[in-house]
Amino acid sequence: MWQLKKEQNVPIYRSIMEMIVQKIQTGELLPGEKIPSERKLAEYLSVNRSTVVHALDELVDLGWIVRKRGSGTIVNEGKWGVMMTPRTDWHRYLEQN
Image 1 (cartoon, rainbow, N blue to C red):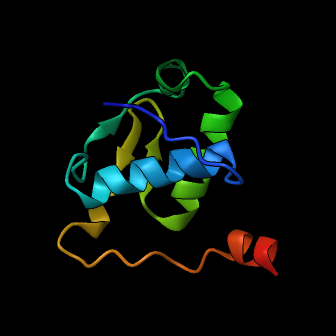
Image 2: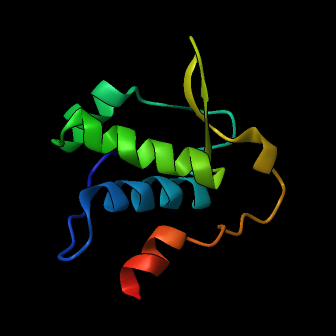
């Protein structure tokens, strides 16, 4: 279920972000559904935990997921039934220009 596609010239944290967003868009992860802990995700994906934290921080900033203290990380329920259009990815934009 949690398998990372590592692509050349794409940072690992970005690949993790894309994998999670794809799971949300395809309905594999539903609004309100809990995402595995940072440690578990790092273990499943064979990456450093700080890489997972970076990816999850970005997804929180983009509104895809929500961190609830004591409950873990969940898919944002506020997006249910609303067309999810990603916000402008300024980090990627600046990297390309």
